[in-house]
Picture 1 (tube, rainbow, N blue to C red):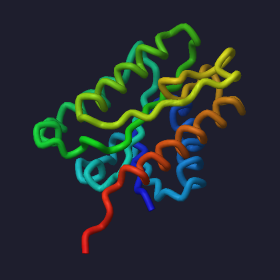
Picture 2 (picture 1 turned 180 degrees about the vertical axis):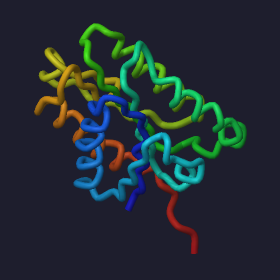
Picture 3 (picture 1 turned 120 degrees about the vertical axis):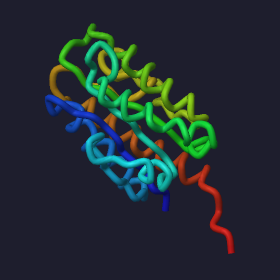
Picture 4 (picture 1 turned 45 degrees about the vertical axis):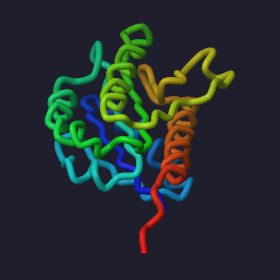
Length: 170
């Protein structure tokens, strides 16, 4: 069973609501999903995970608190401790045109820097009106389409992390 770390900052509650659906998708795919708000997360949480899904409210980019927390993961970067693990991102905000893709790309940059294997969402017809292939999103409120997108992302990361996970020695 893959262990997925669902790591996020949430200020107004939208990001946390989207995280609920992502956690459900990971669990439905058979993963052990560990949820951590950024205030409660530790570096050992990152190390123990087979896959990491990172979320931030869309505040014209990721929150400063999340960026600051990741700034202290430099030792992991230098050692390559997260390289080869599955990674994905999500964001929620109140404006459709408020920079959602910029936030997703900033979050993805953190994962790329660590050498992670990025998991996105395949194109669906729903994406004509909501969502992104970069990661799960929500605008203004959490819709059924957003929840479905979140569950799909959680399940995809769980499946990819299971495939990438090194077999136990012994």
